[in-house]
Length: 122
Length: 182
Image (cartoon, each protein chain N blue to C red):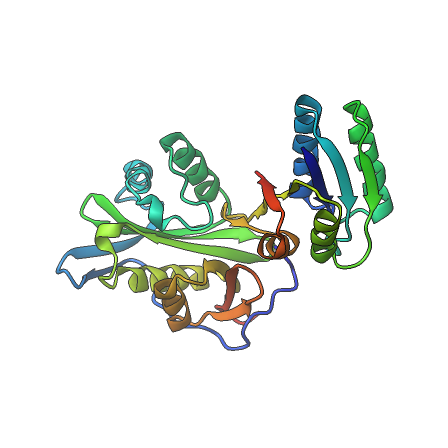
């Protein structure tokens, strides 16, 4: 399966990275990682891309890792649709101190706008 | 969540701190007490577990309460164990509802749950007022919450006690209130 993973640096996106890379390794998915801009993230996009490359390399995967500039949600949807991806994978939300699941703004945009199936990783 | 949340200028309340006793709209004698309290002691925790394991999954909000008993226990230990404030609505020995403030930096996240058989009887409002009174008494300044926007009963209750919408751009509505001067 041709999978596009969007990673912006939030905690849930880093968890989605680990799980999606592992799943790609086991299932033989053709994985592309879009490193997107998330103004709320701690790392710079360059640091994040470096981290993504090391996770991918550690798993022995040959995945395409690219920096994507501009509005994260719309860029991920556009890439998935233009390049014939089967699935978009994203972090499935952060939990509040109370334990409530709150979906990030990028995931909300992608869910409502994508014609490609979306997987939220919990 | 974000530290740039906007709180109303106006102070909500005043609200009376617990305990409180009243008859609900079904004529049941309900007592609202803070948790932990001497009267209920250790059994309050088990009574809460019972309420949450009996909770209708259709009334879950953003993944809570969890459905399995073991998950309910660890979730309760987390929210009751920290620097927060809790009030319980009792119908005799049984828990009818629970409201909580969980510490989040310099603010508190609020949630309230009323067991299905007790909904629509005015218990939520009393429970909410008791929790906010209890919080204000302990100097809690800022309170926020998220609520699914289709849950009009809950949104109405929050507005009634002084919450204002602070973020309407997400799937869930975020609301905030100020309890004391900061």
